[in-house]
Every structure is written in structure tokens, then in C-alpha cells.
Image (tube, rainbow, N blue to C red; front, side):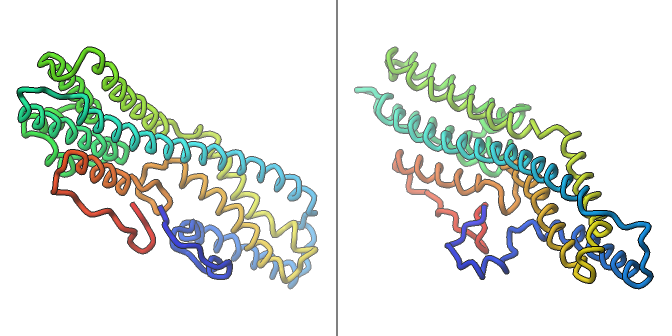
Length: 310
């Protein structure tokens, strides 16, 4: 995610980091060059047979704007839902860690309880990192190995679904605490509800990740945008004359950028500059939870690099 202090309007005009222009400039350049060729041929040889009126382009442009607006709205809904789910993950992690510190207790076996709390909270941290790696299709081994025992780590890495395997271990831990009478029958459902919330968050993130917009709809939008921008000079050259390439440049920039933005934010869990900063959120959860169990080995808060927070 791009994290930048508010800048002036004029500086924003020339700010390219994180802009989709780095993706769309070849398309815009191609369309602009074709517009220059059409304009030159029309003005040099006065060929009238292949010119069009602006009416079809006005009608198609309005429809295309509506399509792109709907598509970008749907993409942003996925982006915002993803952010809400990770906000819920932050809250649920803190709640479960806090409950672990105060609801799991024993009057005679305090050292065993302290050790259990530490293992349980670190397992929650491992789940957060495993979820992030699961969504980004990364190997979580390096991220979670310091929070799990070698046996638990081996079990998780052998599983086809690493976050779910950790949730299963958390449920077993609660059952063991209940059996040891460290956790009362009244408080067990309270903590188990937070693990259920982890499962809901996992399912919600997977739904966003694995449900793209219909492929046929995306193909249709791409084709219409490309065709519209390619044929646009034929409808403008009679009215805009030598300014046709400039007008086509501006219009194609708007449509290609809107198209690219819809593609970019459709998957909010990736590693692009405009994606959600899952690594930073995971690190903040890790720091918060380690503080709750008084663990001195806490990492530093992640800082933006070149205004980008991953």
C-alpha cells in the first residue's frame, strides 16, 4: 500500500510510483501513434471514405464509462472487504491473546500455565503469518518456525491447508486446558468463539482471493476499451484536426487507466504497491501479542520503503 503524506495537487500530477501508467503506457503510446498516422493520412490526402461522425463514439463512450464504473466498484468492494477482514483479524487476535492471559489460570501449577499461555499466543501469531502466506501463495516455513515447536511445525508444513492446521492445534490446546481445569466450562466457549471467528475470516479471505470477476466480463471490457481507443481517431479527425492525437491520448489514458485500476485492486492480497499491507499488519499483530505475554524478543514495526508499505 502506498503510504504518503498529503501532497500538493501539482505534485500529484507528476507522481508515478504506484500509478497504473507504468502498465498502460505501451497501450496508450500505440493508440496515440495510430492516431497520428490516421491524422496525417486524413489531412495529407483528404480521404473522406474512412471518417466517421462523433455520435457513435459518444454513445459507446457513455456505455463504456458505465461498464468501467461498475467493474471498478465491484473491484473496490472486494478490496474494502479484504481490509475489513484483516481489521477483524487484528481485533480477534488481540481478544484471544488477552483472554488467554486472564481466563486460563491455575492456583498451583503457575509455571505450566505460563508456558501454556506463551505457546498458545505464539500459535495465534503463527496463524496470522500462515494466513498471509496462504493468500500470497508463499512458503510460511521461515515466518512461523520461531512460533511453533519442531513437531508442530512439521505437522503444519505437511498439511495441504496450513492456516486450518494451526486452527486445529488451537482448538486442541483449548481442549487440553479444559481437561487440566485451567479453563472453566463457562470460559471455554468464549475463547472457542474467537477461533471460530478466525475460521470465518479465513473463509472470507479465500472467497475474495478465489472469486474473480467473470472472465467473459473482463474480456469484454478489455476488447471494447481497445477497440474504442483504436477507432476513436476516425471519429475525431474531422472536428479536432491536428489536435486529434492529443485528444485521443487524453481519452485513451482515462479509459486504459480505469481498466488497469480495476484489474489491480481486484485481488487486494497481492504484492503490488496498491495492495493491502498484509506484512505490516501481521507484524503489528505479532508485536502486540508478544507484548501481552511479556516476550522481550519483539521485532520492529515495519516502515514504508519508498512510500510503499507491504
